Length: 245
Image (cartoon, rainbow, N blue to C red; front, top):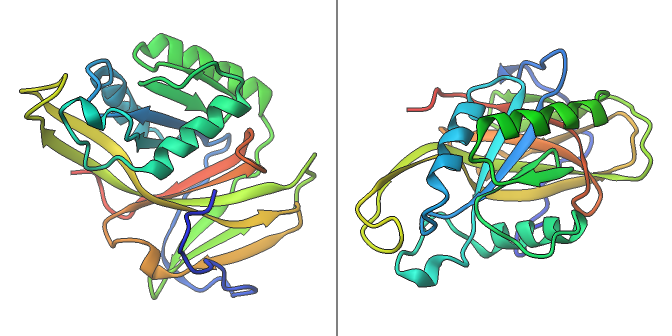
């Protein structure tokens, strides 16, 4: 999904430059976990903490999307956005949900559950791994000038896929002064601040470069290769230049 008002991300045919940092590619995976959450939701903190644990794993690309439909209940989540809420609504349609809810973890774009119980998350991950054992894992590298290079090997696709880039803050700690979590200090991990579609991919070997001005120096970067129109995730990877503080 593209955000309106942004210029194109692509620098077509750009060469992969000698980079200052590159993402390691695990033997299997990684697999993506997207948490839809809100600081105004009293049920969300356990899922937020579970996402923090998942974020430390090399086989998981963990992303936290703060939705804005809780903001009217007394606490405005400063990380919430309409784009995040719309992404959740698209999943509700593609996964044939009757409604959206928080917390909600979407695993690899294929299945969902609240994410408050670790054993339930692991069971869903195991099922997703069986469904998508052959991955189209993007290789990521930051170039000398801070741009992001994305490379995908050729793959056979049932239908086109979207290549989507996400910029996220590794960790935030927020004292909440109103609403359902009044008086608590909440920790949030891998908080998505911006995301855009880089390109639609037809399965041919391809390479793209995303300009450095899309990211802050201390942000993490993730790329999902996702069946067009927010379908199942076919591949994922992340690039984190700094440890979470």
